[in-house]
Image 1 (cartoon, rainbow, N blue to C red):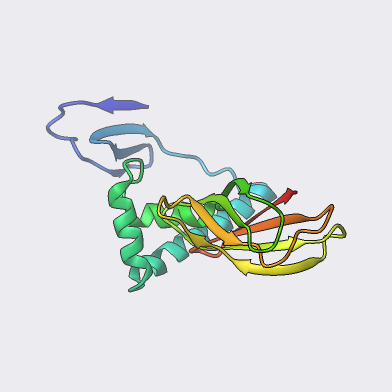
Image 2: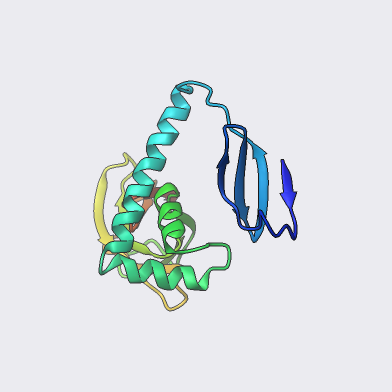
Length: 185
């Protein structure tokens, strides 16, 4: 692979020359490399990943054209330096699940407040919680509300957490990915 610098004739060139050389523009530079050689169908894992990427690009095209999601991705991409554009952010959003961090719980009694860290670029669609019994049976469910810092989500326990019970948090992003994390109390 070669990088062309200050070449009047090939600056900004892209595409294939004959069937041997490929010109690409990356970060303002023109890069020349040999033509990639296909290696057949690929492994089953590669085929699954290729399919996931097809779904991600399909989602991104639809999201950017959507009157609700498009502006969300546009605004978020403008504020994130590591993302080139809204389309790239939408593809990345589809491929990554939300992150759930720590839970801060005042007490395990009904009416007490809990904060959970949950984050995704550009934003989460919602964060839900379940109060589980010792046998993992759902006792109560609800939805958390975002706090002003945009990372923590707040919810109020609707019932006491039984002895040996836990809280399960579910974070949903715009493409529909769901992350789940349980916290023993």
